[in-house]
Length: 221
Ligand code: DX5
Ligand code: ZN
Image (cartoon, rainbow, N blue to C red; front, side, top):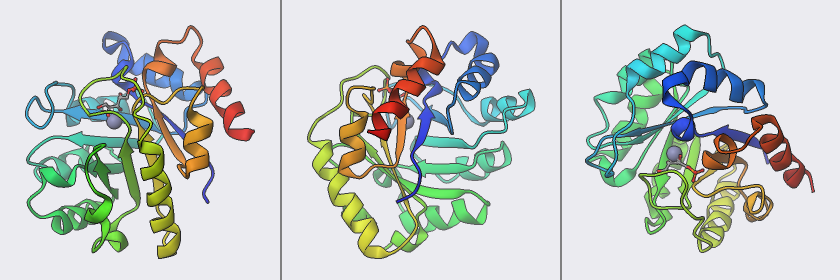
């Protein structure tokens, strides 16, 4: 098992002060910047593209940037995000006609690659591509909005994905996204996750450092 990573989702940050907000949340102990890309097509919301990722790099953000693509089609954005400084690029398998090709494209562009599973999307998408994957991202809410409630059935799916990863012997991160809070993060870790996205639970807190430290304390138990 790899060390636990906390990935603040900047979807819940103040977009008018995005550079400052991202710097603050990394300073407060966030490990990875989770960057939600929504296209008003694959999901009913619209957020940010490669220019914003590049702007964060230009602002001096050096932490890994975890780009979660909720877009359809996927491929054209991969080289653009790689050039804009993405470290990890994940996409939803239903949104790509050629999943294997898209995964290869992401690695060819020098990024880590991952698939994202909606609550009702089966893990069988992993069957023939596990060797081309660095991150499995399980959604614990339906994608499109921050601030939703964690769907408890996800815990069984996390355990199933953990088993699949362990049985493969590959080094693959297991990331969970949606409704993660200090109250449920320990259960999510026990089920087998090692990377935790948290948007509203961090950015709605008075003190980002307190919020992240409280999560780490729960993980240390
Ligand atoms: C939802 C996004 C999430 C979102 C999580 O589609 O993928 O990353 O920001 O927000 P919280 O942590 O508030 O559920
Ligand atoms: Zn996300």
